[in-house]
Length: 169
Image (tube, rainbow, N blue to C red; front, side, top):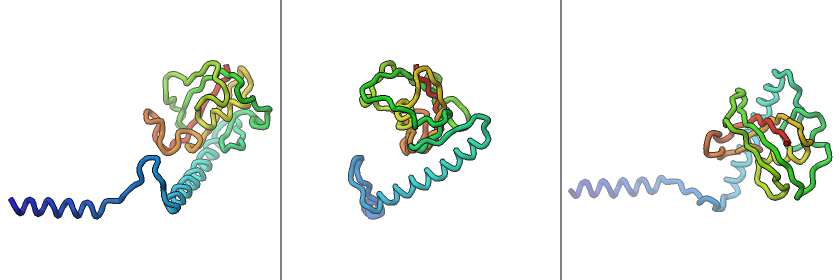
């Protein structure tokens, strides 16, 4: 019995000494950790941009880059006059992966959403500022502007770039 107790104590101590500590959710990261994370995202974004540009090269539809780092099917899209904060918009969009597989059966839809007061994917919110009523556009979005490193915790995994078919109603 003493041998079992001794082995258990030694095992616990050795496990404790090899355990790497992580900051709690919302905790403070060191500058080194932040730099590693920043470099990872920069590299991932570069890889995704190259993959998206290769994908665009195989399409019959023309896509145009935007200032926010996504592509859209409308030329000069983000040079248009932007909608004002507090203005209302109704819209819907479908999400696809780059194998052109629809991720959710039902589109995400909002009625009379007020700019500055809704939480949406960065690329979608930005595109809604420039889309005309009744217009449909397709967005090619790197993961950083989609669901990022966490995914949506349902069907979309982490670090997944998306195709978003957006319609202003």
